Amino acid sequence: MNIIYGHPDLSKEGEQNEKTARTNACGICTASAPFLLLLFGIMYCGFMYGDYLTLNNMARSAAREAVITIPASGDDTELLAYDALEDRYRETIEDAHMTTNLYTFKDIQIDNTGTSPANGAPPDSIHVRIDTVLNKQYAFVNLLTGLGVGIPESYSINYYMYDENGSASDS
Image 1 (cartoon, rainbow, N blue to C red):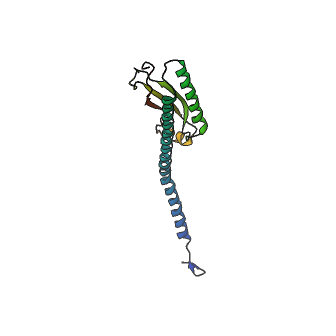
Image 2: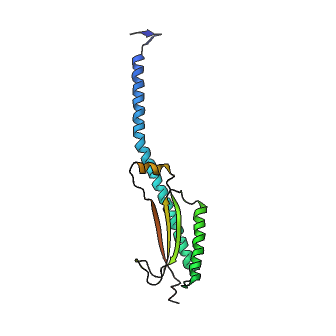
Image 3: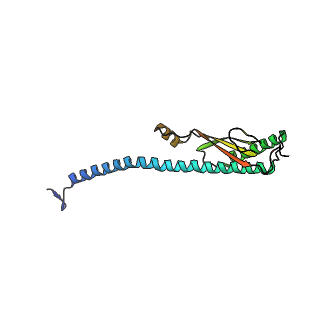
């Protein structure tokens, strides 16, 4: 044993500590990758859910406004009023930046289901449909897709509200 300045030679122990530190660092990196993937996955699911709730509330607002302000006449004035309402809500959704843009807004459609609608829709109701498309500019979306995790390419919100004013055939 060599003693320098009253201390034993720790060169072998120093090398051992260095190897242990490198091994621990590799272990931390290896364990943190799945943890970060899980953390970002939870975060992005929260973003998607928040966007869905925001757009669902916009669909509800549009349907309520259509029910209250647009009389069911069954003619072109009703369709023009729906178009104007669509334009206003389209502008609000696009310009207000209410969502995280994980899914981007594609379109909004407002129409009256009429007295005998097809495909099981409720009669005498206002139907609002909001379509979205997956924003592939997010790095995390590309990472999940590369790992084989399926992410919906788009989703649609369909909202029906009963028209208290009745349909055009009731008046």
